[in-house]
Image (cartoon, rainbow, N blue to C red):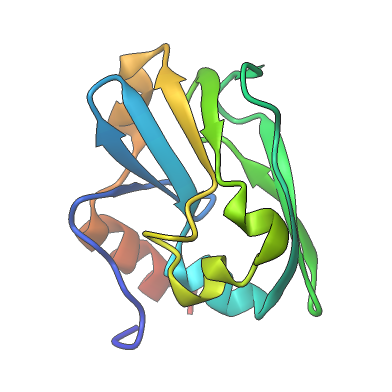
Length: 131
């Protein structure tokens, strides 16, 4: 696990999503662990701005040479922005999962959804239990 990155300024879901809170907006992406498991991404399918999702719904998908995986939204809200840079360069998710490789920004509709997210320490412990 030492080679994985777990920034302290984000929260984590059991579905290997990360969430960075900025006021009433959540920036969402996939974790370093998830991108390493998938390998080099070849395609990212994201929703349209303005689409609404309930916590636990599929909001998109990523594909690599190893697998195609649905993206599960860790909180309820409306998409306010998508990372259009991923259309041209999906590997930004591999090279910078917590910064340049973010997926979507969502206006948070249910702040209590944040209570189900994990700290970096708790997420790292969960991953160790999966080994």
